[in-house]
Figure 1 (cartoon, helix red, strand yellow):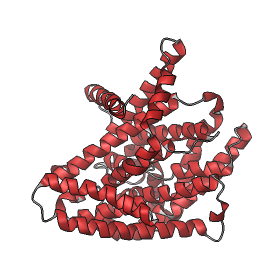
Figure 2 (cartoon, helix red, strand yellow):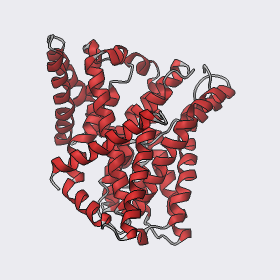
Figure 3 (cartoon, one colour):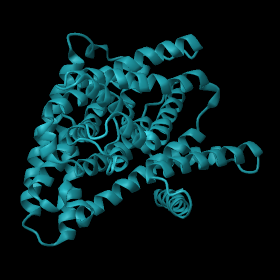
Figure 4 (cartoon, one colour):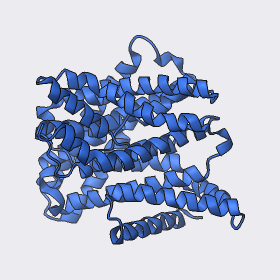
Length: 414
C-alpha cells in the first residue's frame, strides 16, 4: 500500500464515521471518532479471528509502510500544537501566567513520576515486569492534555475566565513539556542514566522550554510582519503553515524544544495578525483552516491508534495493568494539579472545585496518541500501547461526556 493509498483509506474511514455520527448520535467529533476507531478495531479483530481474511497481517503491513515515527515527529506534532495555540487568548494567558506555568511544568513532572511509580508497582504485582524507566515513558505520554478537545468540550460552560484560561493554557503548554519529558524518559529507558540526579530533568525541561519559546517568538514575529501586510488570505494561511513546520525544525536543529517553539510561534502570530487570533473565531478563514486541519489530524491519530491495537501481540499484554491504569491516571492527575490549585488565593471551597474540574478536564488526545505511536520497539511496547489506549478512551469518552455535569456541580461561575 502506497502512502497515498494509506491516506485515502484513513480519510475514507474518517468521513464515514463523521457522516454516521452526524446522522445519528451527534456526539462531539473527538468522542465519535474515538468510538469509531474502537468499532473498526473490533471489526478487524473479529474478521481475523474468523479466518475469513488475515486482517492483522494486512494492518501490520499498512503500519510498516506508513513510517509513523518520521511522519509524526517531522510534521504532525508541529501542526497539532500550532493549531492548539490559535485557540488561546494571550491576554488571559498573561493574566494567569503563574498558575499556567506551574500546571504546565511542575504538574507534568509530578504526573510523570507518580504515574511511573504507581503503574510500575501495579505491573510488578500483576507479574507484567515492566521496568520503571519504561513506566516513566508511559507517564510522559499521558502527561499532556489535549488543548483543542478540551476547548471544544468546554464550549459555553459556566466557568470563570481564570479557570477557563488555566485549563486551556495548561493544555497548550504542557504538550511541549510532555514531549520534552517523553524524550528524556525514552533516553533513560535506553540506558542514558546521566540525565538523572542534581535536578537535571527539571533543568533540561527549563532550558529546552525557554530556548524553544525564544525561537518560536522570533519566528512568529517575523512571520507576523510578513502576513499582516498581505491581503491574500490564502497567502496568509500558507505563511502560517510554513511557520508551524519551520519553527519546529529550526528549534529541533538548535537543540531546544520544537513543540514549545511551535506554540510560542502560534501565539506570536495570533497577537500580530488579528485573523489568526482566538478572538477572530471560526469566521476567520485562517482559524477555520487550522480547526479543520486539527480535526483531520486528530482523526488520523485516533484511527491509527485503533489500527495499532489490532496489531498488538496480546500474549505480551497483561490485562490488570491496563484496567488499573485508568484510576491511576485520574489519581495522579488529581495530585499533580492539587498543589497549584491549593496555592491560589480564595476560599477552600473554590480551590477544591478548581481541583476537581482541572482533574476531570485532563483529557488525553492527539499528542498522547502521537507519542504512543512512536514508542521505540521493545518487549514492553505492546503493554504501553494498550495502557495508553485505555486511558485515552476513558478520558475522552467518559470524562468528556460527563465534564459539563462536573463543571455544573463543582465550578459553576468560579
